[in-house]
Length: 275
Image (cartoon, rainbow, N blue to C red; front, side, top):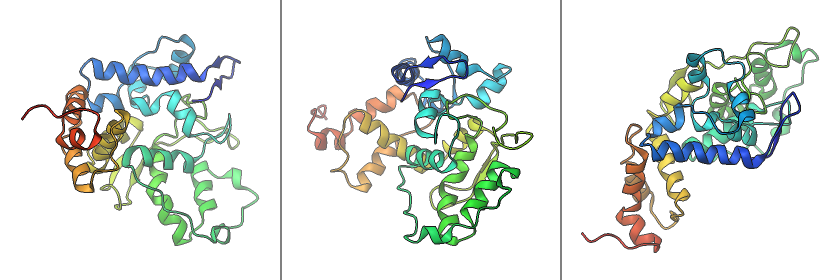
């Protein structure tokens, strides 16, 4: 992650943000936490400025747990993948990155003549709520609406965070500023079954019910362990992923991956245990 500068001028270094992500994941796994814990819980960091950013605007523990939902709602991730600049976020950038992280899905390429599909920008665009303005900018061309159906709902779930990863209840858009909305429905059945959500934690709980998301996380963990999956067939990858349960301690799951006959046989990095 790159360094971020808070409104009071405080700078949080990129290394601090990176370390926070690593430490959070490490503590969850070390303490017997599950995939659900990794993606839905919160814990403080040892950096006071980063703690203040994570807690800013959230009035009580209940609200904290609705919004600071695990690894993907920490500032290190949010500020790295979701920002156009220091003040503005992008629904498209947020959604496509979340889709890659949670479904390992390649985003369909936009049509070659995409410029021809953009509607004329109305002069009063800022009078619209940002989500409505986004839809206006997409237009009603099928090629664009189908693609955005893959990832826009994911971004909406995380709209409570600004470009620095700080909680926001309103956008810096409109007069008076428009309120942030994080509820929506994922209805593009190309990847996941349809589900509704109210906030980031609710969204993560629903995603964890989806088999493709579980399979993708399995693949991510294999890559994190430096196991090369390029030699595995889709069937072998699916078999490795099928053992993942959101409520199984991650350390047990990682151990089962490490001892898998496919990983042992194909990686060349270790030998399978006898039997």
